[in-house]
Length: 504
Image (tube, rainbow, N blue to C red; front, side, top):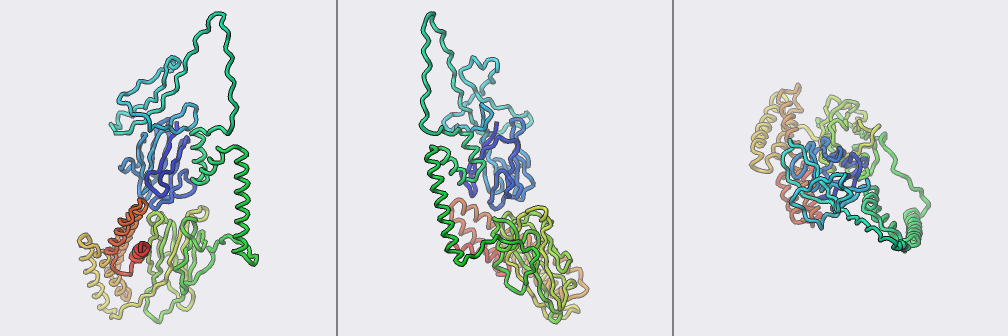
């Protein structure tokens, strides 16, 4: 007994997997049995278990959850025909029956579901029956009725008993087996195993070669090998005309990069699918100069990808923890801005900012930091003895009114976020910090979180339309998203504009 999964929605629409093992892990990293790179799929998203012929799916605490037939599921028993949603990817589940212990996918398209329940066949009566019926095991009484699709196994071929020979009759010699003129056709289980153990393209190439005669197979392989050698020679000749050596990307975890230079085009981190341009497996170092002569607030802004846990990446300033990289939504980039406390800045010597992935080593967790910028914002010109705090209070009160009306107009959340930023700048000049300072910081974090959620929802919805080929609806989603981000200070607006530009 095993099962098969077919992708009904997602990047690899139509791909089928078949399994006859007790557990199957689904997620985004390469150590899963089913690897899905769709945005919104967690590294360890879900697992399907075979418990004595009963199948269960369990969510592993994923960011976007798991659903069965449209209903959220923490742990749910599965039946043939169920649809499992792993984030944005939808897979159809089918039980695979087997007579010989191997996994075999059943073709049930030509069989009509029977309205009657078939009785279970007594093993002692098996030799006298002409057909064998697949009987579904009844579910537990407490589970309650549940609609399921009906899938029947193909009836086994009836084996006719030979009639007894007449007395004195001569025995007819058994017919000779015909010599095979080519390779035998692969069974469904063998084809499924080849597809399961290889990627989609490699699996199909292997099946194509395995079904050819040995002579043809050798000729094809020889020709492909010769072509590969010729292409490799051509690439080396064109790309390395002076005999330069080819090197793999080296780890620059200990390299210190200057924040005075443009780092916006670089993607730091680890992970093949994240577009890394500078390999930094476990740490990322930056430095910059600071002067006390000008009253400035320093921020480091960046975008992150592939980070799913709050405690994964620490940010330190001169050895002091000042923040953590917030987890994002799947592989979508997430902008952050971290303020550098003035008390930890050093004047006249380089200040060091470090991103430290606490899981690497010993792990090999994918992560990416990009569009790194040092932002210097001058403090407003106000009198610290009362005037700065009064201006901050005006900005804060206006932000609260807009925040409470954020459901009325799309831009109100953005405007509240902008006023809270300005209120915080007025309070930076005040020492000691008043109670309003912590209140503004808390409200600012809430506004930033809501803006990030709005941006992620817009991008996810548009991406679903793109995967379905509904380009006009995807473009409309991107254009409508601009009303949530009317100003240029939040990176989501530039990302939406980039997508609109792609559509021309």
